[in-house]
Image 1 (cartoon, helix red, strand yellow):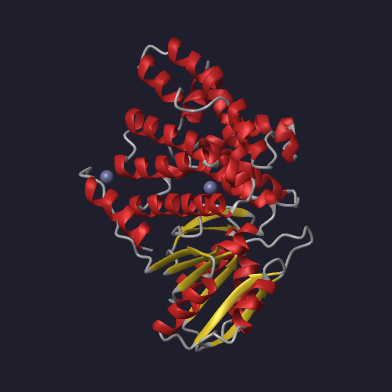
Image 2: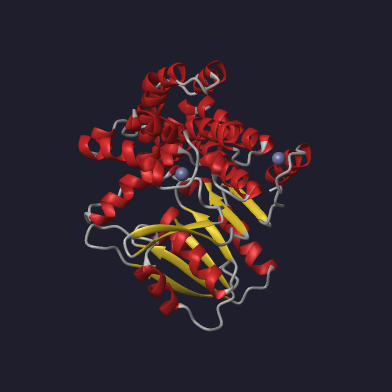
Length: 387
Ligand SMILES: [Zn+2]
Ligand SMILES: [Zn+2]
């Protein structure tokens, strides 16, 4: 925990930009071989008496291992979320009511055991009923475990609610190393998306006065660089590689928490990913992992920015061409990003992921409307769709 706390506070105290730098609300963060022991110690120290353990079919055996261990210091109730016809658990109204039905009156803490979706459901319900929740991720697949935002599907539309971060996170390295390769590749893909999100953020700040914090940008960049420098170890699911990846995902979440918004970690690549996700929900298709979509979308966005947007600057009399070109040059080429994803064992092109070319084209034209945020994709669409 000290590593995260010191890292957070060092960055926080180093910045004198006008934004609020929110303090770290998490009491404990552990990435270790025996994270379960740390979890039990934490439950004991906090004197919790009854925990609601939220899991799904994929993680129920892990949840059973946690609650059946003789070290478990409190009573528990298990809430097992059911998959839909496509085999997915969605963070939607149905899942929320399911957990509420399973919630006994004397519960004093909730524990999310699983990947991102389980966390979003637990985060939302615990916030609404005024309980703390603890994160127990089972795969290094996304950077949202410790975020405050809970993306929930309401009436088939995804809405992100600002709720709360977990009070503690316990990530067991043995369990994380056992995660399927495509989930590891998805976590790596979510991190690769920072190449484009950080550039979009700086563009938005310079061109549209979006709030910007250099310390938060540095934190995110540092997490990304560590990940990329260790891609070989991550690919092999080496213990150290998985530790680096999980650390980076948590650090990216912490950077967002310090800023109080998702700007550092979410730009046009996330907007494309959300667009694909919404289409899949509408068409009742099997969902893809968030990070898998983000990694592929980052490659698409990198190609667009390098191949099209740079030329647009040259034709735009109002643009600072030299500055904006330098900005885009911080993003590797689309091909380099795709090679990173292949190395990590993931799918790298829209086609491989099952995104048809008409959906891809539609998303490129419309995804900037998903958020009211200045990105280079929005700039591109304003200039190409009107000229
Ligand atoms: Zn993401
Ligand atoms: Zn700042």
